[in-house]
Image (cartoon, rainbow, N blue to C red):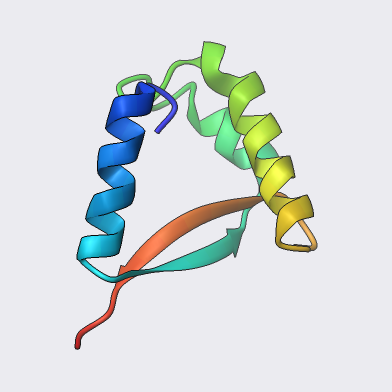
Length: 78
């Protein structure tokens, strides 16, 4: 999501709604996640670390998690 423009983010939102995906908040080890950027540069490079930290802490605050968090989605069968 870090690399998407706002048009793409809107498309993702409608895909999530159309497929009836359930949002799940997952506590993460923020230090480990940032360290993984060193080993998986194809996913994100280390210049994205400040944004990842900010977003993870925002989700921690917003969803009252004990640690920084990450949002994932689960497909729910109808």
